[in-house]
Each structure stands twice: as C-alpha cells, then as structure tokens.
Length: 589
Image (cartoon, rainbow, N blue to C red; front, side, top):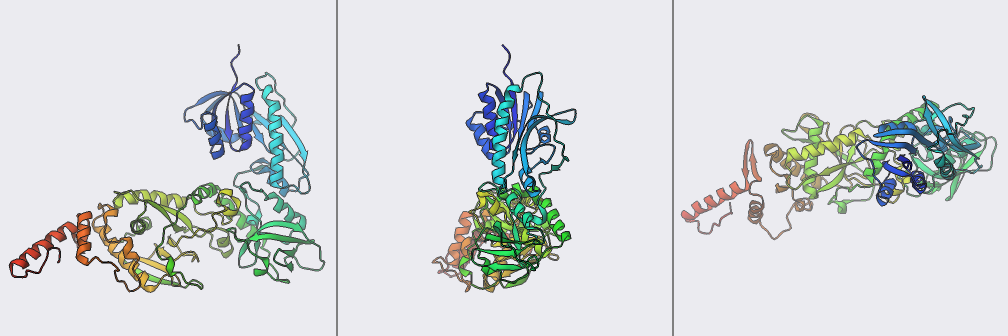
C-alpha cells in the first residue's frame, strides 16, 4: 500500500483554508501550516494542525496561497516533489500582490486565476481559469470570482498531483508584469480631475473592498487645505467648457466635479479618521479644486510606498492602544488651541535624546500608576510638506510599561526597546481606520501627552508636547493654553524637576516607591492647595511607613531617605522635650 501524499501549506486568507480542507478531504496529509494570518491560526488550532514549526518539515508538496511562490523559500520545508502556488491573475501578467486592483486600474476586460509551479527558473502553468470583468466590477467582486475559480481549479488539480506527468499549459502571449507588496496607486489615492472620468471610476472600483480590509488606500479629495476620503464615485452629467476640478454641484449628499472629459459625483465623504462630513461644509459651487503636478503625485506615491511595509505593525498597535489617562479633562475649553512654550532647565539631564525620553517617560509612568499605557510619539523623520503631513499620522502610539519593582535602569531598558521599535516603524496613513475593519469603530485616538524628537507638528488632540531636542540640560514644554492653565503647567514642571533630581540621585530606587509624584498631587486645583484631612506630618509618616528607603530630601549631592528623616525628627523631638518643650511630638520636625 502506497504512502499517503503529504503537503505543507503557506500563505493567508480563506482560500488557503478551503484548499487545505480539500486536500484533507482527498485523503492526504497536512504536516504543517505557515501563516501570519490570525484566521488561519484559529483554523489550525481547531483542526489540530501544526502552525509555524521552527524545525524543518519534509513534505511531498508545498502549496502556497495568498502570496508569491518565492516567499515559500523563507520557511523550513524540504519539498520532495513540487511547490505549487496560486496567483489571482492570468500569468505572466499581474504577478505578485493585489492583482485584481491592478487589473481594474488598467481597464482590463478579462481576468482569471492560475495554479503554477517553477521548473528550471521558469513558471509551468498547471491550471488556468479565465473570465470576463463586468463594467461595474470592484476589487471585492473580482476577488470573489478569483476565490471561486481558485477553489474549483484546485479541486481539479488535487487528483493530478502524485502523477508522473502534470499539465504544462502554454503561457498567455502578454507582457509579463510583477507588483511588489509595497506598490500603491498614484498620489496615495488623491483624485486627479485632469484625468478622464473612466480613469477615476476605475480607481474607485479598484479600491472598493466592501467590508474586507483595504490594503492599498482610499480615494481622496484635496481641497487645497484638507484631505477628505470619498466613499463612492459615479459618472455625472457632462458639461462642456468647464475646467477640470471645478465644482459643478454641491449638496448634503454629494458633490459633482468636472473632469478632463466629463464629470464625476463624489459621495459618502468622511474625514480620514472616518467621521462623516457634508460636502456643503467644505465646498461651494464654482470652486476650483487644485490639481497636483505629476511630479508631486510621484513624490506622494514614493512616500506612501516607503511607509507601506510598516502598516501591519501599526494596525496591530492601534488595535491594542490604551492612551494615558490624563487627569485634566475638566480643564478642556472651547476654541482653537493656543500653543505656548515653556523652557525647563534640568541639571543632570543627559544629552542623548533616547535617555532624555526615558527620564520623561518614567515620570509619566509613575504618575499614571498603571502597568502599561500609551503616550504619543512625534517621529522626526516624517514628511514635512503640508500635503504629506495631511496624509500621514503626525503622532503614533508609544507603549510605556513598568514592572512593580522596576528601578530606573530596568525601566529604561524596556522603554528604549519600545522607543526604537516605534522609530523603526515611522508612521502610518491616517485613513487606516477606514480601511481596516478591526479599527473602524476606533476613530481618532487622542494622546494628551506626546514626546517629540524634532520639530513639533501641533495637534488639536494633544495637550502637552515635550520636545526632547532642546539645548544642554534643557527641555521645551509646548502646551495648549486652552486646555492647560499656566498654574497646572507650573505644577507639572515642579513635580518633574523633583522627579528628575531623585532619579539622577537614586537610580536604583524602585520607581513606584517614589512618594513625590502621587496622582493626588496632580489633581490639585489652580490654588495648589491640598484638600485633605491629613497634615504634613501624617503624609511624612505614611511615606516613611510605605517607602522608608525612598529619597525625601535632596540638597546638592546629599540625599536623605524618609526613614532617615523620621529618625532625625524623632531625635530632635526627644531633645526638645528634655529641654522643656513638652508639647512637641515625634515626627513634628
């Protein structure tokens, strides 16, 4: 009796799962799955299949779905017979990623799918299915056609695998093309009204993924000041003698704009974070919308593609972000932000930007009184031109976490890992919350406190930005005076100065045992008065009981702990009583 044929499956998506099920239904073995797709991971667990083994696996076949065949080389699989891959296009055209969107952008009338292997460096076509593209086809509907055709053709391929002779279909006589995973549409999706109506409609259909994740971008309208996302584009009644980009009609439902050969109607408009907006709020009939020069469109595309590899990281981070619980929400006032700057001289502040960031982060870690939270991080390397800044998030989440017994060196070590990770991944497209289903309910995230390593891009959702690149032993605090009073900022600065002195003097003291920066201190009103029944001696006693080794008094290089302070106070009180001061009690000094 011959041995059962075996395979490993590589890739992502529902088609990978369905093909694996067909393989098992044919009485064949699956030795392992290699995937970073959470859906595939869940299915593997439910099906009792090994996922992403580190050790080498020897299988008869390797089946790759949802990514190019070349990616299989990254996995520890020894293939005995053949590696077989699925491509959602008619090879050799549109090889690589996002083939359906590419076909729609290029106005193709037919499309299809291919199962292939590689022999001697050349692709050998094993199965191919071709079908027509309807006039109203979208990326979503074309993907569905590819899914059905891919599954049906794999069912036909399964019984062929294991035979000595396999089909070798002739490649189509078309120009080969390959698109990498980072390739994106022109100008990050910003509509160019100097194009034909058919081209704008093709862009809209190529970027319409339904309820599925959109990995590319969204169609966008540039008003000259702000970018807005466009949910739907349709052909409008043509009007002659009008320059491209002129607003022809505008109401609450949509806006019609002239194109090179007609007009289009834009509807379902939102901010880049997904908040609905009426076109009448931003546009007027007769208004001339700007058309970006081709060179600028190319620069936008380059910037977009440079950041594309980092998007998966930010999607995961944004889905697990917990912004710092800022205790000053009651101070939020109406009106536009009024930014002011305060400079702070901090003796002993290190010159290294990363070390400065660790000192500031430790301060907020202490006052937050939480094991983990996020503050904002303003990357230095971000597009500086106004339009680019509109496209990409100027602030990204920076994770801060602290163990209960961590001292400053231990905290700094973990913090610097997160900081370097954030810096390495730069930033993300602001429309990501629209494009990713898991983030659509999130909306715009508010980071009331931000750290910045370069020139600050002020953000209306930020109260305080601490610029790390000040002069020697200097930090710049940029704050929104409409949200934070001068008294509040002065209080924060005083607390931070005290905190920095303690950290520099006693770096090995557990941070959470430092009694200076209690949250109650930060909740004081502008009068800076305690609203507590405890007097000062009781607070000192309490601190000495809970943290006797923590610094209580710092003078130049001399540091006195709370235990030492209480001991000295008690000795002084005893001496005074011996000399007739019988009303003195211990801990009064």
